[in-house]
Amino acid sequence: MTMGERRLDVLRAIVEDYVLTQEPVGSKSLVSRHSLGVSSATIRNDMAALEDAGYIHQPHTSAGRVPTNKGYRLFVDRLSKIKPLTGAERRAVHRFLDEAVDLNDVIHRTVRLLAQLTRQVAVVQYPSLSRSQVRHLELVPLATSRIMLVMITDTGRVEQRVVDFPDGVDEDDVLSLRQIINDKLVGVRLTETPTEIAAMVEETAPRLRPPMTTLSTVLLETLVERGEERLALAGTANLTRSTLDFSGSLRPILEALEEEVVLLKLLGEVDSGATLRIAIGEENDIVGLDGTSVVSTGYGPAGSIVGGLGVVGPTRMDYPGTIAAVRTVARYVSEILAQN
Image (cartoon, rainbow, N blue to C red):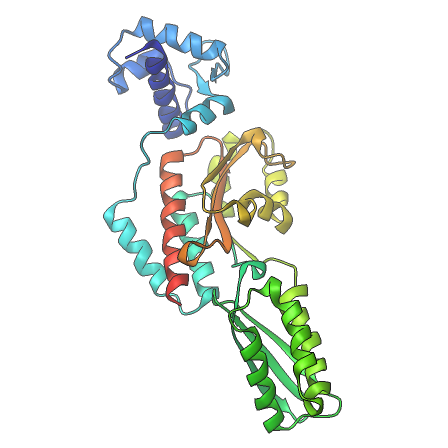
């Protein structure tokens, strides 16, 4: 084992012990807890070198050492083993998510499950409309001059709009309009629907063109112009278990987590794909969150990415266990969406 490899082992041991005990780690405890194969004096020298390099620091005189954000980053980048979920945990995850009755239930079960597995704050983004395709469009008559437009995406997301027709529309015309919009738009990605809707209006028979024009306006609002993304959050109470990890108050963190724009930024761009993202400390350039770490990834059916999910917690985090939980849950959610 080279000196560099040994020092990495010492850093790994310090991180593991500090995450477990929340107490500064000394050379004697490393010798007793870990089979490092060297003397306490050698470990002290390695700890001094790690401290000089900025990977650990001494919080106060006569104390052991604790990892710095730079140390956590090296630990994460050099992780060779991800602590897998146990077979019982995987079965429980699968069973819990399989019992979901619709997309809303899937999302709410997912965010609660992530919070429970990691004991951190969990965030799950609903499938992004901009990344979804039209699966079905339904027109439900409510009155002679009013119908409800229901859009269902390939990810199970459902959007509803009420459409008013000043001149009224009979049941046969509703059936004709339903057939036309489904023939034209099913299977089309939502971001590509504007040109299809414009062509649809032009191609509609003159008798149906007035109600189709009214309907097309609502279709555009539903399929394209609805820009906001929806999120689910759970486990904020878990932050109170880690108050000693945060200097000062939890208030800046809680305030940041109330902002949807902040949460979306934490999860990262959906276009970044299913690659796991780990941001540690100051790598989160959001005010109030520089003392946290974020582990996130994308999810979606059949290899596509339609949303993100992840957890937020203190930098003193069980990274191997958290990474395994985020990856496992994302995989199961993707499988569920692929089945629907």
